[in-house]
Length: 426
Image (tube, rainbow, N blue to C red; front, side, top):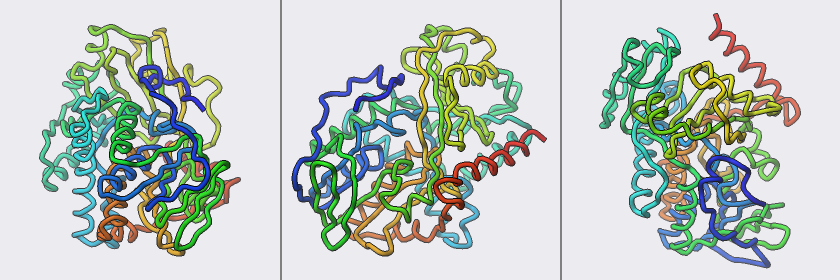
């Protein structure tokens, strides 16, 4: 199965297709899922000397890992403070630092393996309202108190033209320790690095069933992998492979468009400092410039399970509210993707209670570009070094199963999110 038509697939050389797994294959660890979670877990484990087989149902980076907005933003999830009662002061401090470290892992990986993925440093949180602006001022103080070492700069409302050529915002907070990149180029570079370390990556190898035991058997249509440990890194695409996990993640649709090339001068006028930008609403807008001077504009998270009939026109309206000067500009690419969202919007990293040799990471809720890398390190430490301190801390975070079963899960959450959106309108 080929990649869908996105800006990323159109500007990336995918390389030769990897074969599907055939017959019986043995490994120390089997990883299911060829996105950022799976590939980075395979790389981390192979670097530690374990034999690793990765199974991907389609192509490496076919799903959200190769389609996302490309925004590399500090932090693990939403509102870590509410976990203080369960994790304690030290646990909250650990999670805060982990959110910073997650971006550093990506930085180091790109440098170590010389991955050309259009990396640019600089990101700005955008305030939609005066209340948001006050919240960003408090956020700056919180980050400084946590020891955040990268440059932070508040941008007052009257100076927002220095950040973005739009009248839509009431202030901003620039973070030079976050940034943006080409996610598919990053992932394919990491996949090549994993293979160079000895990991075996198979495509077109959808897993049909898992037989648990001291040696896990992972069956596809054409083969079977036997391994002492199993990692599930499927996120929104887990489906019924492990029902105890799939009910804790809702697959939500997100949408992205890429304009025609705007030319360097026009692109620089829109976003003078070449920052990644994201607003503070429930259904966020996020956008940035590309290396060939397009505007890449995304957001509009849908929980209904139904995509708009015309994604390009749907997202054009949102883009033109922010940038009316782009009315009528050509849209060269428009696509959708599914992201895994948990009820508390905090990553789910752990090990199955019933099968202690089965590990998982999922539910990144829009922070996947960096948190996947941190999750991979946590899993690799637990599996290869028997260092389970970080894993056990993540396991102390409770994660609810969404109500309603498969049929009603999405409609019920869509109603709940509508209530939050209505609060924004008041």
